[in-house]
Image 1 (cartoon, one colour):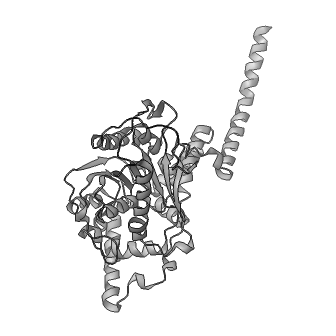
Image 2: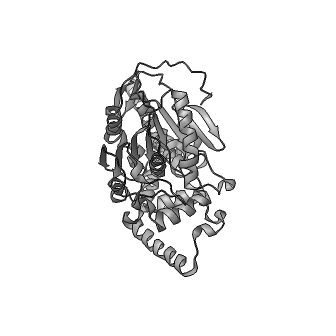
Image 3: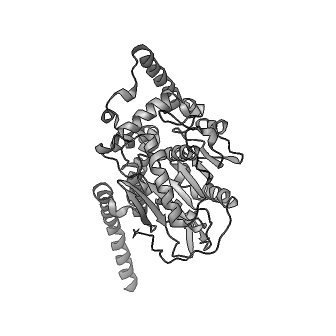
Amino acid sequence: MPERTLSFQTSRRRSVSPERSLRTLLDNARQRFLDPAPLVQAEKTPYEVIYQEDIVQLRYYPPLAEDHIEVAGQQLTVNRQSYPVPLVLVSPLAVNMLIYDLFPHRSLVKYLRARGFEVYLIDWGRPGWRHNHLHLASYFADWMPKLLTEVRQHSGQQKLSLHGWSLGGLFSLCYTALGDPDIVNLTLVGAPCDYHANGNLGQQYQRLSRSMRWLEERFGWYVHDTPKRWWRSPGWANSLGFKILNPVNSLQGYLDLFRNLHRTDYVRDHATNGAFLDDMVAYPGGVIQDIIQYLITDNCLAQGLLPIARPAAGLDQVQANLLLVCGNNDPIVTPKCSLAMLQQVSSQDHQVLKVPGGHMGILSGSKAPEQIWPQVADWLAERSTLSQPREQEQSPSRKRAV
């Protein structure tokens, strides 16, 4: 009798299992497409906003509370000593800040903090229509001096390291070229230089450059002659453009989602990635004008010039230690595009790190914590000296915790 009862209960469990699986699948699908926010795991690392001007914020990541963090499936001991050279992450435009703190187990800011760096992050915010007057120089020549002054006051240190991804790398490079002698290290990840030597995109840029030159010579027409609002690129268009550059992977991502809707962990990861890719930020109209004129038509960086109307300095003024991180599969900024920078700067200490991955992957992809972050942190650590442990109590200058 007991055996028959056990057999009946087992049979009953098996009979309801498909119903439970279907219910889980439908619940996961509903939440992923109708209410994905609770699934997102990004931005779990505490930070403090220590300065804000208009839409721009400067974040500081205080010492971690835990003694160990998980990185690439391994436990990393948190370094309680801090390097005396603060590290400032300079973000690009068009992206939200989730990419820097994407998952609790794959967070660039948490990793760098655990390695002993005082970490700051510049968040350029979300420009609206009233910000179409902004140009590239608004960021590296106007805002960055103010923001780095705040970093120096907060940290008590004069010498800084800059870490710039994509257009954030361009901002870091151009700011340094303007003459700040206390930028000692530049880590530039997927940073552009020669726009005409940029693979398939570079060929399109060359065609656009020829067309713009023709208009200039024939009619005296320049893109800056038109209203800036005409050139604003909205966030949804930037998200679409990013996906179009690799349509196969974009489609494959959704096919994999449908195949794994029964797995809550997979749906949660997909929603977190989507929170970054599906919520990109607008480019101000003035920035797009500068990109078309200076970066694409004139290809000014490849000539050692800054993307500004009357540059008072050039890339040859850059003497900071330089690390270039290039993705072998990056269609947005190819290695050849980035490596052209070495012909223009005056850095005596420079190194190239070629890594597998695309434009997003080389910053915070699934392989980055194991294959890229340690090399970047080691390079920076070799060019810094450990100081005494920093107290974890808040200093009076810190303004707000998030």
